[in-house]
Image (cartoon, rainbow, N blue to C red; front, side, top):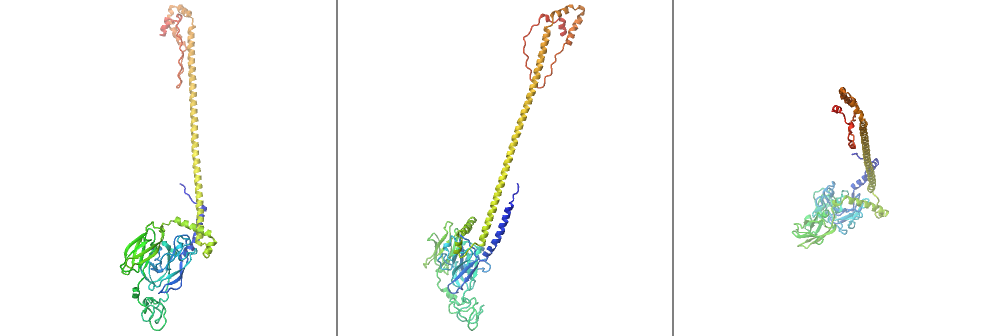
Length: 544
């Protein structure tokens, strides 16, 4: 089997594709890795504050499912990134965030920034990710303390909190995962007077607008105070303590882990603010799915799991929790999605091709609507690479087809040549057989002629002898016998012998080995010898 090699033009095109792809996709990949978030405004530690959050360098996938979630919360590894879902991070373990309804009209604690022309774009409450990777939205920060979606409590005065961005609707995307630290105004000092130790840098008993517990607000000890006296750290004031804050009634809340809201998986949810030991039940879409009764803990908390069947439709569903003794009824919306692993590469390629066509068709109008968006380098690189790859594939296909046609033609010519040679051999054998038959026929004819000639000669000789006997005179023989004296009898007795010796003997030639059988001589009627031709007694004795 002969080895096949790509033609030189095809090798050149492949090399060109690799070079162009590396040259154009390199900056694009760097831009995705440099995704960052900027926060305008400083939140207040004791009250809800609305800030402006802007992102740049994010990956924008037109017509793709999902987008970017924007949360306020805490992560376990702010500088390392091991908290991220793409690296195995789980909500409630490596990161926590403020829960909110996943609808367009929620309380503002959670924002959904959709991909352009995505199937879930109607649910977005934070706009869309522009083609150049930028977006901007408003986010409400509840304060320095909040209850996380998994039911745990987060105190941002003791741990680092900030803005979290992850892939939306369960689609993990490392390019869009970021954490941006946020500091609170007045978090460095408490209200009131007193002394204490801490890591603060100010002197005196300063004042601050902090409605939270004094000891909690001054825990960081990093603020600047004004006044006289000594002390610069955590102080306690007349605004209450952590124990007083814990004794306040907490409004019941229900949260879900959106990352688990995938068909065929188990949805994780949690609730707070219930009566200790209270029985609760949880339903999805007016009883489509249900779990319970569940018993609330000593602090009025409850957590559970709800299995989502594979035939459940994707989209927005309502999850409701009902308390038996308190009569509490709370609900939240859940967006159920498909398993990202089930989305095939062919579908993704088709979506990318459709997005490229739609972008080209929209032209300048789309650029004006998006504020000057244009083709990005990675999109150009993908288009050029796809075009060159198509050329390589087509050229290779044409070459393969041509080689196959040439091979088939050569095989057909060889088969025809073999058939022609076989026909020629058969014809030569036939001619040789005919020649051999003619030679045998000639030889048989010659032998037959020779046999016929010898038979004719023999018949002629026999006829000659018979004629000679018939024409011999009888009186001559009688006279000879009568005139012979008696004393010459011995001589007469020897005469026939002499006659016999002088009589020519008729010899027959040897018949050929393969001579044809001689025809039987024609029967002649028997002739009675005449008395004149009867031999003398002496002659009879001599013959005897």
